[in-house]
Image 1 (tube, rainbow, N blue to C red):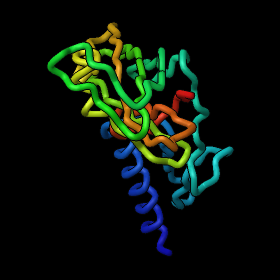
Image 2: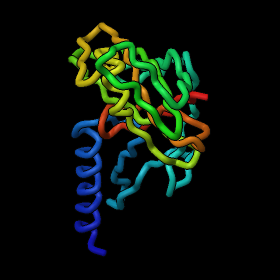
Image 3: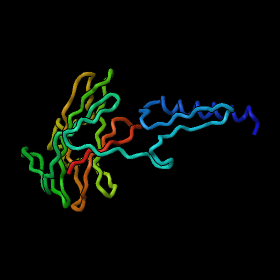
Image 4: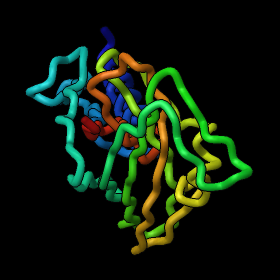
Length: 190
């Protein structure tokens, strides 16, 4: 291959990789491509991870502080609330399910320098199924649900979410993903 073409490809790979790493999102787990002497591009990969699959982070547990670039998340409680949630408001119907409602309480601290919009996490089971919060339970939680909430720098907020999961769901974990491009970190709930 032509030497100038190889050098040009090396710089092209470097430019694309650097742009991807710096355009919105975290650089955690990102690999940086560089050009080696002679102009051939080389890719740096973690030595302990297989080339085709990134290493999975170890699951944290309830009470562990999970730190990211600009936030720290701590799951403070998780409880199986059964098949019916009791409403303390006479105008709100008590939601019921054929599965189970799981209530998860989380403390989110903004350790960055800008306001942070809380990204509502999903619950994941050992089959890889992802569960969003229950819209039926939203009315019971009120302002504790942290819906469209932001936190200013140096402050923290407690949030409560309720997830509706099937009766056969096991090995539940909260997949915390503070930004759209961040890899989720699992916190075990059971």
